[in-house]
Length: 340
Image (cartoon, rainbow, N blue to C red):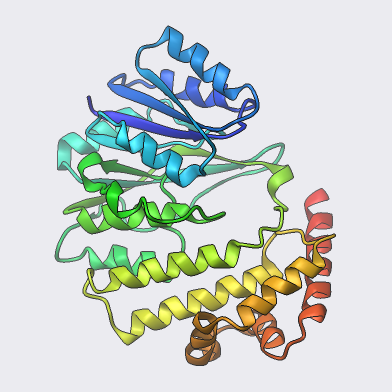
């Protein structure tokens, strides 16, 4: 079997049918579809079971809610295909996705294929994800560090759903110990395959449809998001030595990323804190007293733009209530802009 498509699913009854149909309509039929129902309390589990009853290529696994990260681990544990393709339950594949991936596998036998997505906002616009490299570029021992550098310096390579990964590149035993985090768990899942891959191929092809749900564009405030970002940065730092990149340059890049994440949490992210201002201030206090944040501040604050410096400056000056008021204003202005 060539492909295992892993779909973590939680309360996705509105979208899971379209997701499954996009897989069943593939022009390449050599696949296994693994749907991991992560403790949903809507009807998406029944919908998936009904599809599985009519197509033996579909496997549905039901588990207690443990987060998308551990749902993906469960999916990879059950993968029979040579390659794993990840698909979120509210997204879809292009009908030719697997056919195109197979073509590149037969030509170059890469361990990882990186491709592009088309992002569409419900009742809104459509835009394509960023082009990262020249079409057809192959990264091996001599130039693989280019991929690692991109992974360290920005977030464009973070997601799993624009990668087909050879199953043998995963080592789930090395990731099981990570605790569930609210955002960014794709990064933790990507580190080991990137390390183990001997050959990575980038193709400038749109093979994935990523849905941006308008009602979720202003996200619910998640008090543990900083700890999640911190865990990701520590994990990335742990791989620098494996990638022969444990130098001041890349350590500083991760410190800058930490400060940008804090800046986003404090002011620029889409999280709505209305009614939770006191909790928000408590999160800022935790950040303020965190040695990991302070180390990043001490080494990399000067490297930030003025807009990124503002919330960091207010945190360091203990102007936390002022920052919460600014956050409410920024969120309100963004909501008005989206409505128009």
